[in-house]
Image (cartoon, rainbow, N blue to C red):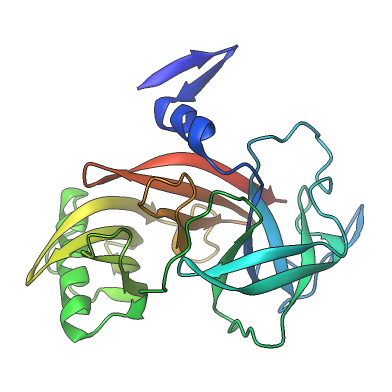
Length: 279
């Protein structure tokens, strides 16, 4: 459902999220894996630098890309919904041709691995909880592959394409009910194309079911100009309703953006898109 807000068509889920979402910006914290080089605004962050990218600001009024980054300011860091110290802005830098980021440092007690992605915000309404994420075990990996094949089949990928690759997969909990939820990115090559599936699935005992399946087909296997990779970033209850939102990273050919999904009645709906950058 879409509603007319001013002169723009706004998704109804986004409209609700605007009303209930955090009162301070939300940032993704990750090691720079996007770009390194020079832009008209100066050199970018180096590969491997720990950076912070604004992906959500419900009160943004300035078109200045660097307006939300204040050198020296500290932000609460969350991993898996759990409070894990602070990050501090050291400097502001270009990221891609049309975006910026802040290079940050963490408390000495905080260590983020090269592959880790986390969230940072000073919003007052955040409801932190213990980190329930774990790497999927053999049974959970098998469930994820079965769900992926179910999704691939709906898009015409032949059943004989059984060599499904798990790119990234975690199992977690998103609310007080404690149901396990698997979140992952899987792929398979078939018929001269790469087929990617981002999944969120609910697990109840030995049974699992798809709650979100996002499919993309890449035919340019040499340069990847039509590619799209989706990866789970992290989870956090941003609207204080007792259920964590899920943040994902979507990367294409020289571009990236972040999307926020909310859960309603066992299904996940996109509520926000932000943090776009590219050349």
